[in-house]
Length: 209
Length: 209
Image 1 (tube, rainbow over the protein chains, first blue to last red):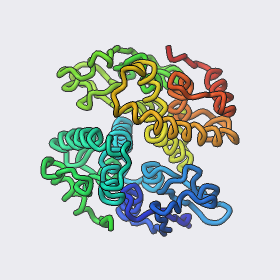
Image 2 (cartoon, each protein chain N blue to C red; image 1 turned 90 degrees about the vertical axis):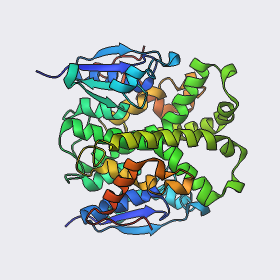
Image 3 (cartoon, helix red, strand yellow; image 1 turned 180 degrees about the horizontal axis):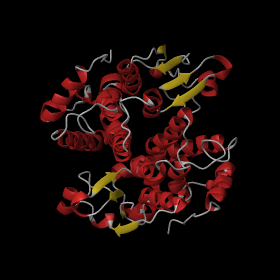
Image 4 (cartoon, rainbow over the protein chains, first blue to last red; image 1 turned 90 degrees about the horizontal axis):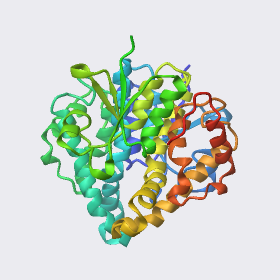
């Protein structure tokens, strides 16, 4: 029998949604346990000692009780779930190219597109610190550049690594489809919009909320 | 016959060094082509059109001429090189756990530890913009937290994913072993220091410079 899977998450987080979407597309049962990151619930001594010493969600828990194993980092958790499935290409170059987009997501996309959404929708512009306020414009420029690169890639392909959906699409979909909540204008990126519609039409697709 | 491998790099970049170290540990021949990022050599129209539309190095080139394929993102290039080798665990959880540390490196470590090294050693503190200057202390705190988490992980293991070296170690070694160039004090992290010595003793190890 397969081991029980539990997602430690904040339902508003796109990083958590990646894992729920991967499980849904694969038909895998996934229990969830919710935390409120705005209330510091992932920084408690118990959370740091048992779930993730880094104090962050999402964390995928595999198994239960004393044998439970914990896997932080959204894209690593998606990799675990999709092991051996059609969401990870078998070809050597295609697999590395998929990871290329997943590392791009964490380095060039998430710190800009997701952080501005978090600041503007959840923290509130009036509550930003002077340091955060100074970073809004650099993050706007870097996030727009990331979206532009995605739009150009999608001009020639239905999905990021060709004609079939992979984890690269799931990783990039999570914060892209709600990028307007961070002040980005998705109408500027027609190929991204067409890809969002393709993602939402996938069998098993679940929305973020 | 194996395809020719060429690394488009700036030799001062730790992200480029990851790929050279992976190739060295595996005994793979790797040609290099150098660019000076301080002179904008990765933002020329030719580079953007043929090597990487994202304007960044490293890029691993596989093959030559019209059939050449290009793979940006250092950790994805390492994955390609190490395919089927001992540097990637076969076990499902161990493989995901290795990727967990590689995503941690790109999200929590590189933007802090590597960026401060770049600013302080190559740009020069006197030349930082006001926005950059405001980010020095947040990056110092976040980089120190990343090093502390690494130190605690290495307290119980010879390498990040257990007793054998994997790509997680290579990814994290690149900027950690030169972290003092960014103002971090490695003496604060004894388990990191012992791990650096283990890395430098690996058969085939090559130094950064």
